[in-house]
Image (cartoon, rainbow, N blue to C red; front, side):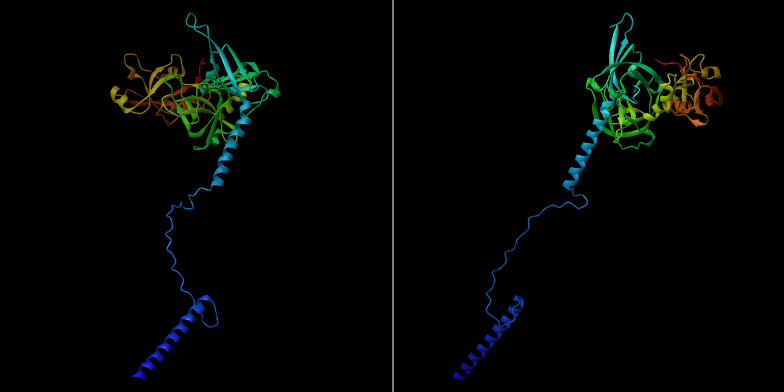
Length: 392
């Protein structure tokens, strides 16, 4: 019995030593030791750390602060530098207009904007800024005030060219761009004198191109540039610029019924007639000599016209080109008795602007084919275009 007990103790001791050596060998390999195993203390349990959740932005959307700041700084400097270059070219246009006899004040005063185009003293502005003016005064950027005369005008496109006598070193001509190269979405900068605040800058984009602006009682303005750069009273005649500081348009009017909708005459329209105006020659525009209204299905149904597209001739100006050719207007008692113009030289006419666009490229004395509907029957009438009467 005792022998069996001593044998069990001996076996247990041998087993314990073997386990210790085995464990020591494993720990030795894990710790990189190559000698005899030694007793290694059991390490304390590693605490479990739960990371704090955070929202990450996808790499393609994550802003890089340095680059963003750099772009903003670049844009700010670009616009500020543009203003420094162009503002000296922008002038204030002050006018005196005689009042109506026996009514109101004897004269009224107005103001607008303009810009210097050469060192000979030529200045572009809107025709409506100087219309009927008995005196025009220009204030240059350095404060010099000089009288100006109208060298040429294109009333139908609202363009006027002024001339001042001033030292060449006091005149800062602006660069003229190419409005035909414009794209919707390009940035646009307007500089002018709104509400008497001289040389004010506003920034926007080119919102639209080729806009016809139809105003009741007058010929539409064609191919206008639409912009959301703020245009206010006093801005008229000032430059609309691209980001290179080149003039792309002459700021002209705003749509008072809409927010952030302004319009400018394309600079290319002015460039086409500037040589003629500089020479002091009249701008002769072709003229059809009618007043009309675009048809709609409602109007057509109301007057039982039988056609619902075209221009209903309300009046053929007596003695005008259309009247001489035989085109008839309506009467007071029967407005629907006028001819309906359907096309000009084969081009469909849906709006008054379409009719003007068909005539404008022509010259005085050209013949055009006008397709009309009269009494339900269609016919073609040849019209020799006259010269648009001077409008003041």
